[in-house]
Figure 1 (cartoon, rainbow over the protein chains, first blue to last red):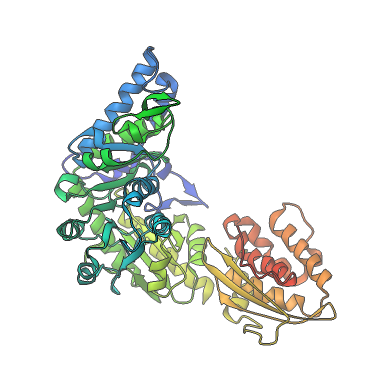
Figure 2 (figure 1 turned 90 degrees about the vertical axis):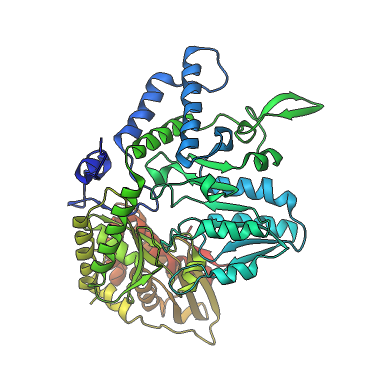
Length: 409
Length: 144
């Protein structure tokens, strides 16, 4: 459909929510790092499932259950291809990236953690890639170590290297920072960790909509992402794990589907991935995610990334014309996320004023309070762009920021 | 937007009144809005059941800073039970559709906040912290 070159006007037509007025102005949706809008194809897939094929999966022998199961498992193969996993059995459907971190922390890392061992994360992580590790370290009397960032918001690799040691049992890092936009050199970091026999988890929540993911090329041990940040539904996400690691893990939750045989003398667990999918899953979510992958597959991800990079450079330059702008996060390699402060004006006030002009941005600590501490700010305002955004929208956004000064000066 | 950011609010945000940490306060409470990271320290000097002095420090948006500043101006000289009654009136103004703001005087300028539901907690943070200070509650009060 949109092959060859990106036709942004046509792409915008695919997203019904973009076509609306907010407070009397056309919506400018710049909160894509929080969640993206959904294309009609995803909305239709959800509607079609509930209108025609709704049934539980892996259970009934009836027609509807077979249809639902077929679509559910076909989605798993689609996910496998999307991230180039060796096998679809290595792709587990979960609620999202947060649940994936918790599963790996509780089920893979905690049983292998002894007092005094170390778990390594970074200073730029989202709270969801901090708190689950704090929880298990506390339980095991292990130590949580943190790779620091520099003032551009980049990880300091020499510090990372120095922190990796015999006590390091696990390393978890975000592919792209939601608060700073930094794209981390994860392939290199995975190699460095593996050289010390340290397994690695990649939080790919911010990466999936912006870049091609190849888990075999990365050689990561685990990789997780969420459907709703890549044009799919909320409440569905994927954990990829190397088969031998997943097989060595105990189940995280007990229930139906995750067993092969249950008796009161003992229970035999199902094989992967079902071992980790207790209970009736989010079937509609999986089908919607599958539609989102189909939608993205019609584009060349390198073109998507290139276009978003153009938007970021344009916005980075445009925003400098606004008085008192301070960019938070100026890494050399950045995704389309623009975090900033404006003099003494609180980011919440910025958010309210631009919202009055139809511009949706995020204001707050972005669930990354350690990042805020590093830059000594309580909060930032953040515009984050998707490939359906335009330069014209950035002009509206920049003008709206000018209004902030009108109110406060 | 001017409904929300009235001149008086902008003025109190720019020059918050009674903005200092009181050394001989008789009670103190700390408020926190986890949504936006706003922090507020409120100090009261209560003598014979009357708030004879009050002050605050902290970091917050224009609405929360101005709310604390104007609240303190309105409190000084009131008895504790009068202050609690004003809390109720302000709370009603910010959360109910129909209310009489005439009794609130200067505080009525915050009625515009009601049209911005995401900002109501910015305006109420100071008031919730006040209740905690009156009770001398040492836990950090949140707006959640």
